[in-house]
Length: 144
Image 1 (cartoon, helix red, strand yellow):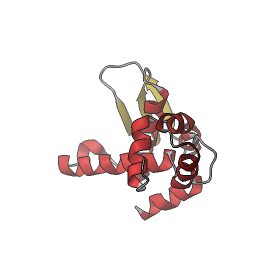
Image 2: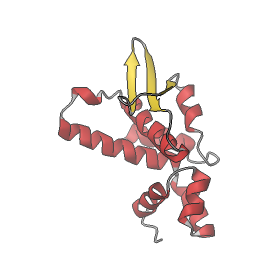
Image 3: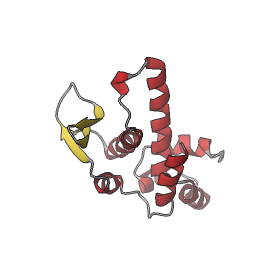
Image 4: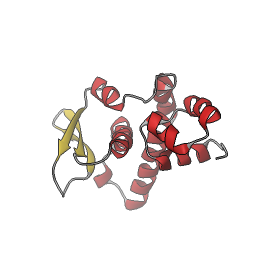
């Protein structure tokens, strides 16, 4: 997880909301929006190129969170289908945690929370769901 702390540190002072699509494209990962009931979200390597496959018809907050989540899988080069269920659950929790931290950096959240104390407004600024803001506040032991 220390490598991810270094990765996250690069973006902690970035203006909000984090430009998750740009981060992904800068890593030469292709984002493909698909209209399929069989594919939800997936990070996959096809030959030498990495792709994040995304449902096309989801709200912006969900799309941004899941892109950050799938980015964590890319950084770990994880193949979720080739591992045991218990390990997969742990990987998914870690990817969620990474996404919260990337999209809602603690210093920016702390400053914004001290000014507003409004979960809906903060969520709009970070372009995440109110649930992500609540989870991040809880993670940082900030009362709300």
